[in-house]
Image 1 (spheres, rainbow, N blue to C red):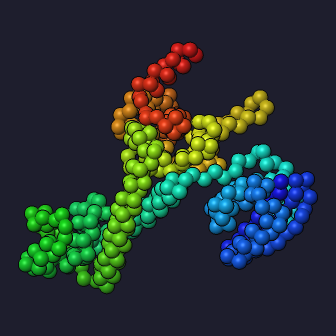
Image 2 (cartoon, rainbow, N blue to C red):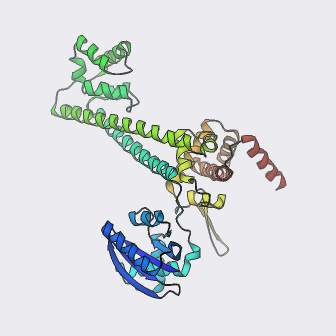
Image 3 (cartoon, rainbow, N blue to C red):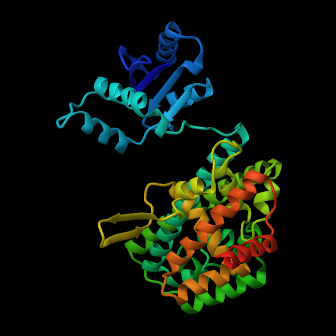
Length: 405
C-alpha cells in the first residue's frame, strides 16, 4: 500500500509518496497539463499498476487532478484543510510552510489516520450531471435575483411608477415593455399607432392590458428631463436584457434537468415527497446521488446536511447545543426549503410539529431545522429502499415509537 499526498495549485501539484510503513519514498512536482498528468501516471506505475494499491489524499475533490484519479478508479480522500492544518501543528509547535512539506504531511496524515476518513464516492454520470446542472441553475437564479434587485433600485431613482405597476420584475412582458419604454418620457411621448405595433411584437400582451398600463403611466409617471434620468433609462434597458437572457438560460436548463430527473430510477421516490416539486426534488436527488455506499445511515445524512445539531459539554455546568457549521450548506438549504414547502402544502405531521415547537418557544428557523432533521431520515429511507413516500406509514410508525417510550 502506498500513500500519496498532493498539495495542489492552479498551475502545478506537489506530490509526496510514502510506503506501507510510513517511510518517505519520493517527492516530485507535476504541471497541470496533459504531460504533467502523464508524468504522475508513470511515477505511480513504477510502484504498482494495481490502482487499489494507492490511497491518495488531496484537500479538495473539486479539482481536475482529483477527477482524473477518481475516473481512473483510484481511492481518493478529500481531506479538510483545517484538519490538515491542525495535524501539521500537532507534529511541530512551529511547523514550516512549503509545498513539499505540505504534500508530505497530507500523505503522513493519511498513513496515520486513514480509517478516520471516508473516500470520495462518486455517483453515476447522469446523477453527477444532474448535480452539476442543479448547481449551475442555483448560481443563475442567484445572479438573476441580484439583477432584479438592481433593476428595482434603479427604477426607484427615476421611474417608480413602473415598479409599482409590475411587482414581478422578472416577468418577460414587463421586461420587454421596459425595453421599448425605458423612461416616463417614452411613455408620455409615444403615439398610439406606434404603441400598437410595439404591442404586437411582445408575446402574452393584449391590447386591453397595454391600455391599462399606458393609462397608469400617463397618470402616475413623473417626467423630468435630466442627464441622470437618461443614464438610468439606459441602465434599465441593459439590466432588462441580462434578466431576459438569464430567463431563457434557466428555462433551457430546467428542460434538461427535467429529462434527467424523470429518466432516473429514483424519480418516483423523490417526486412522491410532498412539497418537492421539480427544483427541490431534483436537488435532493442529485445531493443523495445513486451510489448506495455513499451514506451508511440516516445519521450520516443528517450530519452531512447539517440538520443534526452539534452538542458541546464540559464539566458539570457547561452544556450547549449549536447548529452544525461543518456541513454541505446546499443540502441544508434544500431541506429547509422542503420543510417550508411542506407547511404550505399542509403536510399534517410537519405542520403539527412545527406549531408545537413554535408554541414551546422555538424560533421559526429552529423549528424548521428540527423538521428538516426528520425529513433527512425519511428521505434516506426512501433513497435506500427505493420506495415512495407514504404519510400513513410514517405517522403509524411514529405513534408506535411514542407509545413505546
